Length: 465
Image (cartoon, rainbow, N blue to C red; front, side):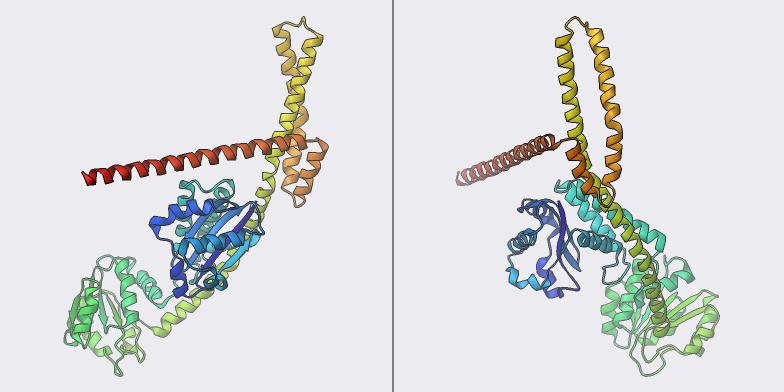
């Protein structure tokens, strides 16, 4: 079995291409089922976010899986492969596993260390599991990826440091207020960065937004997005008395608020802290305002400095997470090597059980006078001998399978105990079970289609009457 991922992301395809390959949430179950029915695919998970669309599959053959996956994408989205081939990446086995771990930990995200992708990967896996298109490989791999990402975020704190100006401003405010619950925000001007910052503040609990702008209609437009209050510049100092946070971005060539103006307002605020963010260039707020008691003033350079420091911290955390990924890669590889042990152990036990049964039959023929109690004692003792003889070989092959040359050890084990016939019989039985399941599934689909057709015919008949 081989693990493969095929996808497009923000690095390989612009949004104009990516938007053509997004799965509607309502269609995901059907897409998973169709992907699972694609030739060579044994297990599958579909991951879709605004920055990526990825198909994770377990396949029984490697050399044609890219062709089959391209065919699925082409058919599902109705886009010829010539239009997406150059944007599509395909990783196999170790590279595919490494890619999944990096994506889940946030190392492959547009903003390094973001944590939202962890929940998206988890939800994608759970949906695939509920749709019954995963098996032992992905049930193990995706659980391991999610557990790794949780541990990486907890142990390194990579997501704790905001890496955008707006997030940095919000985090700074938390140091002052602890919580934004019931805090009032005033926006001076109506710039895009101010809007983005107040959006984050609003999401964190701020419950009143006042927009002050020279053009009242623009203030009304922005205030409407937050169920806020719009005002002209004439009321600026009045509102400054009651707000907790000020975000300024006017584009004015002159200072909008001076130290003297703010100092006069502070006398009416009764020592309540005032958090001020000046995102304008040139600056709106006189720098001397920051010298006033209970006033915390930050400008765009302060915020960029914080962001750069936080980015550096995230990069350091990413190096630690890379080492954690290497360890998890080794652990998963070790686990996959042990998968080949189970069929061998089962084959050995089957062969030993058959030999034991033949021996007991021969004993009963040679000693026909043995009563049931004597036969039971003999059967129990001889079975114990067989089990004791098998115990050490079973323990050793499990240990050897986890080593680097595990495949070679499995081959030797098969030859030493002459298990070829038992393994072949197991494979025939598994194939028969798969064929039986496929026949059952096909019958269920036929039955559902028939019921749908009959129902439609009944509806048509009723409509005609």
